[in-house]
Amino acid sequence: MKVLQILEGAYRATLEEQDDPALWITQAMRGAGGEFNVLLRGNAVNYACAAQDARGLRLGDWSQSQPPDIGADLTRLLSSGVGVCAVFEDVQQRGIAADLLRPDIEMIRRDALPGYLQRFDQIWHW
Amino acid sequence: MPDPDKTLTFLLMDPPFESARTATAFRLLDVAARRGLHVNVFAYEGAVALPFAAQKQHANSVHNRTIEEEQHPLPKDWVAAVMRTANAAGGQVEWVNCGLCVDERGVADAVAGVRRGSPADFWKMSSSSRNTLVIASR
Amino acid sequence: MTTFVLIESRDPFSSDQVAANCSLAGELAASGHTAVLYLVENGVFAARAGVQHTRLAEAASRGVQILVDDFSLRERGIGSAQLAPQMQTARLDAIIDHMLQGARVLWH
Image (tube, rainbow over all chains, first blue to last red; front, side, top):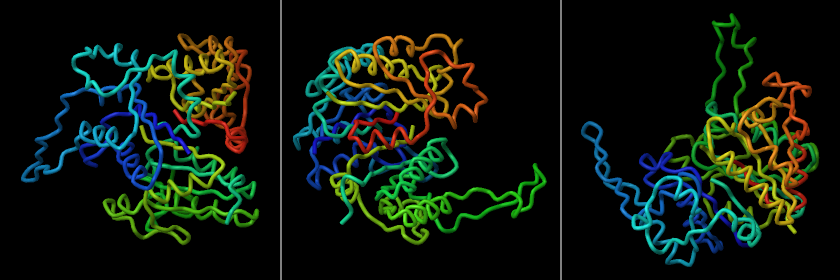
C-alpha cells in the first residue's frame, strides 16, 4: 500500500513534542514496513528550508536538551527511501528564495498534483 | 478476522473539548457503527484523552443547571456509546491509544475496550481496512 | 479514474488554503477524476449564496460536486434557501459511502 502524507500544518506543537507529529509517525510506520511519500504544502513548505534551528528554549530553570530537528527528520526519511516534495506555488507565495531551500526536496507545481495524487492508494492529510 | 471490505480506520488527534473536529469525528464513527462495520480508531496525540476514564460532569451555574440537569457530554461516554452501537449492529469499534502519547499526557486510565498501541498498530489497521481517514489537528 | 473526496472543515475567510483546496478539486475534476468537496463545520460558511471570494462556483463549473453537511448548516442557522445554487445538502453517510467505495478521502 502506497501512502502519500500531505503535511500542511507546521510548527504546531513541535517544541512541546520535540518532533513534528506527522513526520514522527511517518518515520515510525516506515520502520514497520510502510511505503510513503511526503508532500509539503501550505506553511509546511517551510520545512524545506535549510537553516531551521529550534535550539535554546529555556523556561525558568528548565532548558530543552532535545529540540526538534525537522531538517534531520527529513534527511532520515529521504535516506530511507521516502520521496519528499513541496508545492512550488506555496513556496513562492511565502517568498522563500530558491537558495534558502534544501536541494534534496523536489518542487511540484499545483497543476501537476492531480497526476501525482492518483499514484497513491491512500492520501493522509495532516 | 474482520472482513477488510467492511472495515474502516480513523486516526484522531484532537484532545477533548478543544475542536469541532471531535464531534464530527464521532458522528462519522456513529454512522459506521450503526452500519455494523468494523471500525478501527487510532487515537494519536491529544485524542488519547478522549477515552480517559476520570472525566467528570459538572453543574452549570450560568444556566442554573445541576450536574444531573446539565448532562455535560463526556467523550469517554461517546467512546463507550459507539462501541455499544457497533456491537449491537454486528460490528465492532476497536480503539487503540498511542502509548507514548498516553504516557506524556498521563491518561492511561481509559474506559473499557480501549487498548494501548503504537504507530505499527495504525499501519496494521490501515493495511487491513477498506479505507483510512486521518483527521489531524490544526 | 479515481474518486477524490476533499472534506473542507475550514472557512475561506480564515485560511487561504481553502481556496487552494477548491482549486485542487477543480483540477482533479478537469483531469477526469470524480471530485467531491464536502463542506462541514465552519466550512459551510462558504455555501451561502451571497458569500464573496470563494472558489466554489469555479470548482462547480469544472465538475466538482459540492456537498454541504446538513447538521453543520442547521447548527449555524443556514437554511437551504440561503445556499448558492451549486450546493447540495448531505449527511455524513456520504463520507462513509465514499470510504467504502475506495475513494481517496482527505480531511482539510
